[in-house]
Length: 203
Image (cartoon, rainbow, N blue to C red; front, side):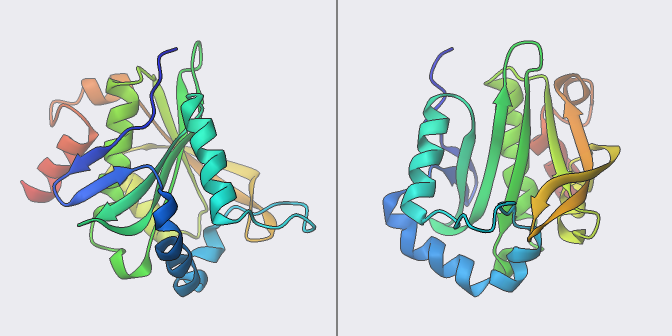
């Protein structure tokens, strides 16, 4: 398996890149300011004795996993300003050839179409560059903002999965959405998820 990291993806003012050591202050400030906005959707540890890792520990773990081709952990930036994250992982190769995606953006940048563009960039990279067959996004039924993202990107609703992920202190139900490479290639509206999104929103 050839190395797939580091990677930088761009679309106009939007850039997806690895988290840097120098992002620590901006990242921690963003998470603190938007704590009430983000915490209902944050994955949590079922063992309350374990603390959330520090920024340096989290970044080192993500970088190690990325260099072993297990995930693509991107910082989302707009005009070089950190506004969120989007991650593809875990990534499975071979017969599964799939990745699960997760994302968040700051409250001040929500509703501007940035999250759909960031997710579309990652999906296109997974299909075109990594050769994956399928991507999946799991969303809590109550998360209206995230549901709008998968709707805009035309991911299929594959149904409710009970107690799928430990989120905000409890095992939570999620709806699973998916898209395959064949579905994108077979869509005449655009050669890729981002192209299709742009045609529908700007056309």
